[in-house]
Image 1: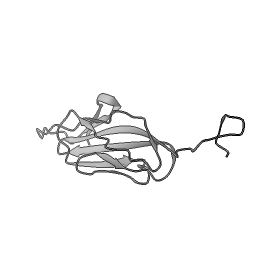
Image 2 (image 1 turned 135 degrees about the vertical axis):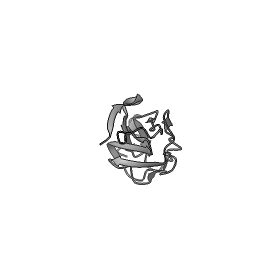
Image 3 (image 1 turned 180 degrees about the vertical axis):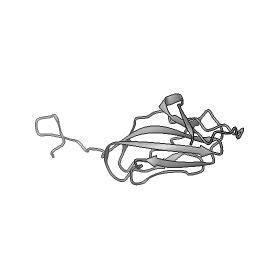
Length: 128
């Protein structure tokens, strides 16, 4: 059974086994969370920071990225263009190597871009 400790940025580092493999577990985080994205607009590149050992794989451990957004399983980079609204989603990303694992929790909201037009009385009216 592995041991766990809290890493920087609130992540949890899971250390595999009880013997010393000599491999340092990753220690990951994603700057900028919570992320507020817009349906139909590219999110650009959301890159992780890793102050531990190099990761051999990246996975979504819990929750789900919005439709149209994906995690690169080799680099941990998140890219894409959201296609649906998401009110507030919590997603846990895990980086793993031979020394253990590290989790980073991110929060995501996706909204549609509202179109506003000038109303009859000179104020902005989204109901037109």
